[in-house]
Image (tube, rainbow, N blue to C red; front, side, top):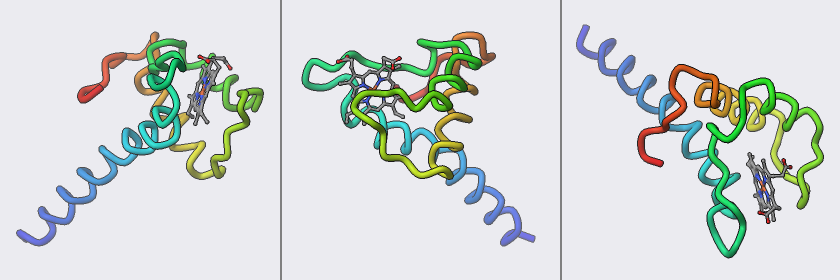
Length: 91
Ligand code: HEC
């Protein structure tokens, strides 16, 4: 029983923090540094983030795999300007 609880805790912990890590790695590696403007999920509404990733017009071109992109889009949508949680703890 304890093992089940523990793995559930571990899974939700890992899943909960992974999208934030991905965003820091794939977006904040440039944004918020060396004169590149900061980008926050709350900068755009969920629909705008959807369009942002669908358009693929970001310059410089983003080299993110499809799976990673889906994780990032979900993260941006969850904390978008029109979401329930626009503030991200730890940002
Ligand atoms: C290789 C560096 C780099 C990475 C990685 C990067 N960006 Fe950018 N991004 C830029 C630069 C440079 C600009 C141009 C504007 C500027 O200089 O502030 C820009 C512009 C933007 C803009 C405004 C223009 C537009 O296309 O709407 C948004 C929004 C944006 N980035 C979001 C993101 C997100 C979200 C990620 C992560 C998935 C990301 N960026 C990753 C360098 C980067």
